[in-house]
Length: 159
Image 1 (tube, rainbow, N blue to C red):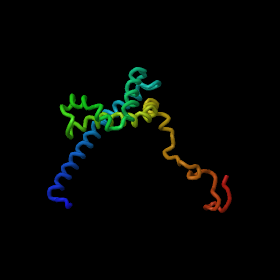
Image 2: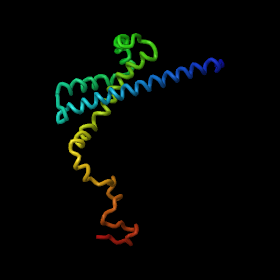
Image 3: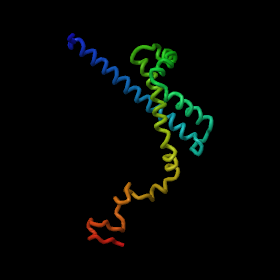
Image 4: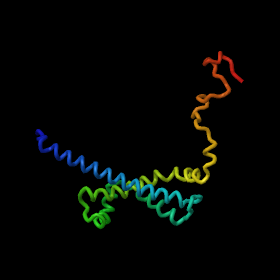
């Protein structure tokens, strides 16, 4: 069976455009909402800027429940909510809602771990200013007071 590309190709282009549309809208919405949830989670943890156990527990619980759920199950579980928010459960716009909800909690989990250190650094910037501009990840890669045998030191160690 041969495909008729004159009728098939426009459908492929339409589907690709709809996919790009869904992904870009979901990316924008979930990034904004996920960062907000992640920052709220980081700010309200013990030792955070605004410690509040109840406010910290609710987003953390939602992240731990929603994030590991397979997406197809999330679509079915969110179908009544999607119908209420979007007005339909079918179509490109209806697919954006569950994608955004699930991606929001993924972004929130990604945004959460590094923020306490960054918030601490913002509150206490002085140690940052005294750190060296560059530090080598391997001790043998940094220039130190010891020479390396066979590499320009004539086989001798410098003191």
